[in-house]
Image 1 (spheres, helix red, strand yellow):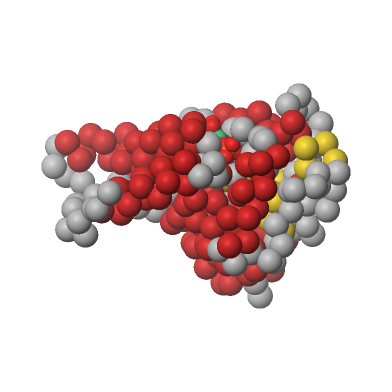
Image 2 (cartoon, protein in one colour):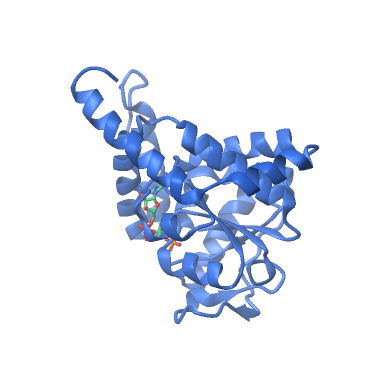
Amino acid sequence: MEISKDHPRYRSLTTRERISGLSQEGIVAATGLIAHGRGEAFDYLLGESTTPEGELAEMVAAAHMLEASNPVISINGNVAALCAEEMISLALAVPAMMEVNLFHRTEERVRKVCEHMESMGAETVLGREPDARLEGIASDRALCTKKGIFSADVMLVPLEDGDRAEALVKAGKVVIAVDLNPLSRTSRTATVSVVDEVTRAIPSIERYVRELREDARERRRLIDTYDNMENLRAVARRMCRHLVEELEGKA
Ligand code: PTJ
């Protein structure tokens, strides 16, 4: 479909076209389109921009990733479709491993998502040959690699489902979620919940990775003083305020 650049929602419409196309190729799950729509609705409530709470969580996320011994970024269909290049760039900057782990897992989809990441420039993408299982997950989603997710101490899990986020936290890992819904089980379970749109959040985390690389003291301060629940409450209050003020013409 041809979308005019003058359309006020050009970016949103072209993104929809892209993920819809990648869903036909089997990279994005059919329910990934539903998840995207839910994300868009929450992004409206945020004013479609990064909030101070999102920015703080992004800073803390960068600090954790730099402090980690084995940081791993989990890639699913939506993430591969929305921000493959940004993820590859972040993984190089930290540096961190990337592993494909899918909610709607089939061997074919794992292969397709890996190939998509590689076609966008990724050199190493784990996930095709799982050799370990995460405890606390009954489905095949538990399948992972020893080198990657299994031994990760810090995990970045964008657009995640609550079950695995819980299992990762129970396994003692620091879990960084990127989820526009502050009420989701993932957001409430994660160690750091970045309530921001993933294509804004990932470059911002990378910026803070670069800023904090030489500043171990600031990384420790951020990690030690951050209160995830308080940050989630603050972003939820901001969403409510924005909704009312927008309609009253004050936003
Ligand atoms: O590729 P698969 O098989 O691993 O499946 C991926 C999806 C996303 C379909 C799967 O993980 C899923 O069903 O996720 P949920 O439970 O729908 O949760 C996704 C969360 O991501 C929701 O809370 C959305 O609000 C949020 N979300 C959607 N789009 C974005 C987003 N958060 C940040 N940025 C977005 N662009």
